[in-house]
Image (cartoon, rainbow, N blue to C red; front, side, top):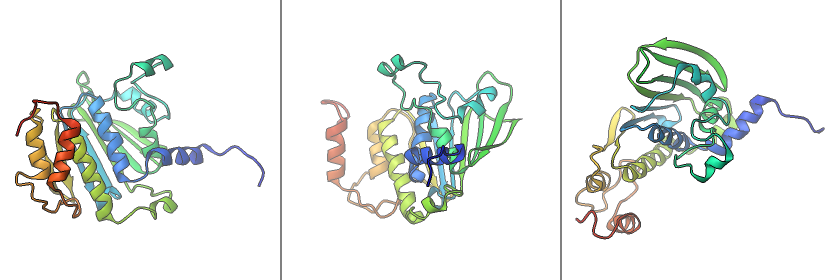
Length: 248
């Protein structure tokens, strides 16, 4: 086979594979974007383990209408401008690959509004191809919807696990992020049922009780049968707590 330059669609799908491995990868990237946007409340909704449907809603700064198409281009970012910025970057993401990678392998709809705008914007892109941009009414913040993950790459989709397993990965990820950010109210909805809801009151103890349960007796987790026990909690506290803080 002779050497040739790959077409842009193939390049985008290959690049997407470095960022998006499963539904939990999508949720991770979008939650980190929401945190970087200054959100104080984030809602994660999934159906079919996140394979069929993911929706992340936040109350962050939003994206300007004129910047939406640019946001889905590879290496477009608001986090850095030059290589020197890498020495001081404090955001969770900065490479500018997340949105383009997700859009390359799913059907994406994004609704967003900045606080200074009179109206919101709705942008649709499927498999990397722009489908529409329009003005709509929307609250401040961003709602990102991903449908039919890997719809255009069936070879990759077949390597996903069952919907239950993929959903468990999403649940575990959201729990970890909630534990890391007690200042943000985080809600998880799985197949229209609420699985997690933290208050965002900065109280780490409340979140630990929400995730592990007050009794902490190794009860099965609703994420997929993963058992929690005191050893899990002890390891977390040793790694994350400061001496004299968050006494139980």
